[in-house]
Amino acid sequence: MSYRGRFRVWRGDADGGALADFQVEVNEGEVVLDVLHRLQATQTPDLAVRWNCKAGKCGSCSAEINGRPRLLCMTRMSVFERDEVVTVTPMRSFPVIRDLVTDVSFNYSKAREIPSFTPPPGLAPGEYRMGQVDVERSQEFRKCIECFLCQDTCHVVRDHEENKRSFAGPRFLMRIAELEMHPLDVADRVQAAQDEHGLGLCNITKCCTDVCPEGIHITDNALIPMKERVADRRYDPLVWLGRTISRR
Ligand code: SF4
Ligand code: F3S
Ligand code: FES
Image 1 (cartoon, rainbow, N blue to C red):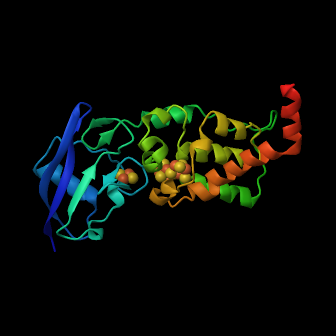
Image 2 (spheres, protein in one colour; image 1 turned 90 degrees about the vertical axis):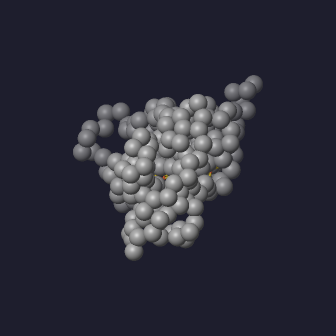
């Protein structure tokens, strides 16, 4: 059975904007993205919304619904009361291009700062051997669809634009963890995570994990193990001795 749903949608661009009220038909089984498409088709043909797969796999349709970072295509209308006003706004941590579309290039520049997989020199393809436990560990991280909802929600950058320069964000600290835990990767990633990518700014609030549509345990399986490796290294007697001698 269809009904008239009440929506508030942010309209504007880099120079500013405001929430606009709409009433739109909602049908059984629909998701928020369906309703935005109907809004485009019937009332606001110029509404900007980024999407691609409509299946929770491309990571394009990230936005905020009632203030919570979510995928528009995976949020069912049935989770809201019929008389509830559903507010849709762009991701807050990234600059707005137009309406619900943000410029997520911050994330691509962070990705480029991470050195790629570094196997030992001379290791030929086909000589790679990995234990199943190592395969499974990195497979969890590789479920990431790069929706950047975790990057959007993390308070280290959400409320502190000035931290963006020194903080890679949960998605990319997780990428560093994935490579660090790879048994064949020989790059030293622990110190870089701490010194260059801002691991120390994460105070394990787990908000990133809470919003991840892939259910990746970002904090428990990537960030905390990386923090433990940093601590192990700091308190390793040999490393301590090395640092003390080099300071003399
Ligand atoms: Fe999205 Fe999860 Fe990947 Fe973050 S880790 S970008 S929330 S899929
Ligand atoms: Fe941010 Fe996640 Fe750490 S939300 S503070 S990166 S646990
Ligand atoms: Fe692809 Fe939503 S449209 S994840």
